[in-house]
Image (cartoon, rainbow, N blue to C red; front, side, top):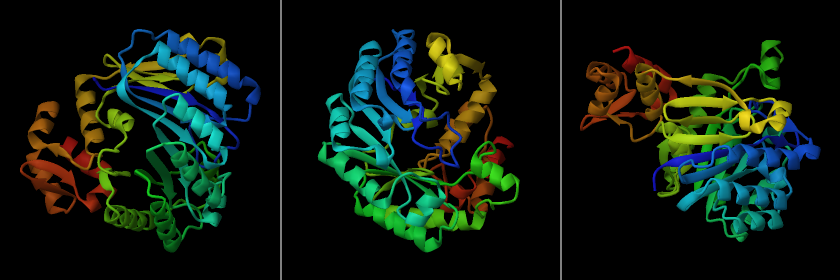
Length: 369
């Protein structure tokens, strides 16, 4: 089966998290059905796309939709855009929107992977992050998904939130590991300009996370997750062997994918395009929702290849890098090795733990060679 992915964006949320810069819509239950109809109209305009190896329903919070509405939408998308045998089908879920019946409905339509946005298992950190769920709800969501037959379970965590101590983060990781997930994503809190957190930082009422604190928490995550037997395969992602996110690996390896819904991005035949973030425009004409596009030059694609591939823990071969970039990067790689940022083993370049904290700097050094 060739690697091709489909991403479906469901923008609805019960509340806006203050750090979120995604295309989200708070409330608006009145347009849930109409939005799903628009998704299907957009999907119909892409009939003939390759059979997909992964389908990722993200958001927003897809599970705020009525379970039968979500089931029917996924079912119809699969009819319009067929999946290959054994495809990975993921649904993102926030804990407060997960129910036993809802997860059973997802399993019935073929969902085999659930990614739960736990973010933290410390109550005051959840509150500071503006999350709508409790620690208990996150645990219950995992239990519900497992009971429904989900064998591929992922947890999303955020570190560096306001008021989070080193002990808070350590405790969150320990609690997450107690749930025996198959995959964990651990992301540093990023302050985006347009978000409530970004505006608070701009006016001086909130401090940005300290880089030293983030670095220390990242190192704790790597130590604990590696120690628990999870394979560190991408800078921010760990998985049991064989449970790496197939869909996200498409992004990190410049694979092709189709995005449906507001704000969704696509990449096919050398062209990248993205949809409008405006809900009204999308509902009016979903088959013509494209808001912009770009065709990268060969040089830009080569540089992007290196930037993305360096995020993968298995690194890149020097010969492969030279073939993509059209020049040798050995001298720059050896200089990075001398700085403790990479290792060179059989001419394979891999980031060290310190290098993972400075991945952009390492990539810039290589591109400047």
